[in-house]
Length: 499
Image (tube, rainbow, N blue to C red):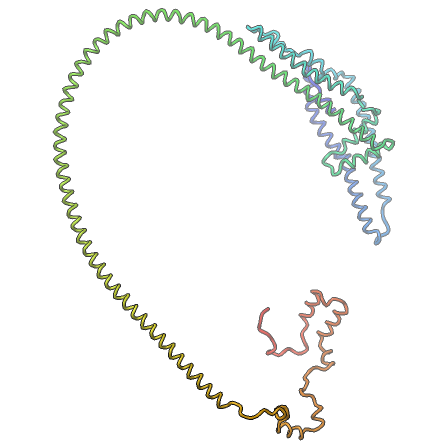
């Protein structure tokens, strides 16, 4: 119904009922959206619900062996019955709507190719009053060319569309069910292609997957060809209107140009008459101009004499003014020269004072440099004297040490037996020791007994964690950190370093 409303066109201005169908198109769109929300959306919602419940049943299979699949199956069967009823109702409405359109004779309002070919040349162009016959013939030829181009394209598309029947080789009922099933799955549904193909296989179990895909491609080609015919028809109308607008504008421009040529011819004759009258006036004007030129020459001569007299008086006045300005300029130069001499003398005196001050400063600087050089020389001499004194003291100390070495030098003969043998004090102590003292340990041991070690709770907790295999975990570290020893440690064993 929506495609029919898109293709329908009024035949005249009196067909007002056709224009009211546009409002009905909006109502159909709202009805279609409500139908989709009431029929298609619940099916997808039920499918998602079943998928979710299947996952939950698989997870809880071991814990809850009982399930409510009978209730779910009853719900699915109920939805299938509802969809079957809806499909049957839609099929009946489709058949009734086709019969109603045929009975009302609305097919004559469809825009067809014959109407466009019949009215290819507008009456505005054929019945126009054009002053240039060649221009009118060229415009008519342009309309013919446009009609032939679009007519050939539309004829080719119609021939391509006639190669397949209206139902793409299927029976009408199967074709309508296929279209309805295909329209339920739009591109906004996730994985709509797989869902659509699965539903088509369930609706048409006797047809294979390849047949369904072939029929879908044939339907897509048929819709694409119909869309091309519609777009080309609209383009033909648009080009026809644009060409008509350009033709009317061109005809109007031709009529305006013809009127301009007539006006130009009349203006040209009028200009020739005006030129004849102007030529007579020009001769009279030239005679008057010669007389005026003679009078102006006499007046100009008198004005030239008066201007020369005025110029002479101005030159005399300007010469006197220049002499006065020269005297003032000479006095100004003398004053400037005197001022420069005074400034130069003052600068010379200042320069002499600065030079004397600089000489005195240079003398003082030389004295200061010489004084510092003498002080540096004295410091170097003192350092050299100090080094010599240190060398002399070092030599004396070495001599004293050598003398001491000579005094304590060994003067007895070597005796290996006496050197390796025991001393007299050792022999005396060895004779006084008893047998049990000889077997006694050299040092005493200060440690813990086994009972004391086992009494420590930290050892027992650590052994329990080790038996459980948890002694390397973070939990074991936190537990051992909170257990206190039986006795607090001494304060001298605690470290103050922070790690």
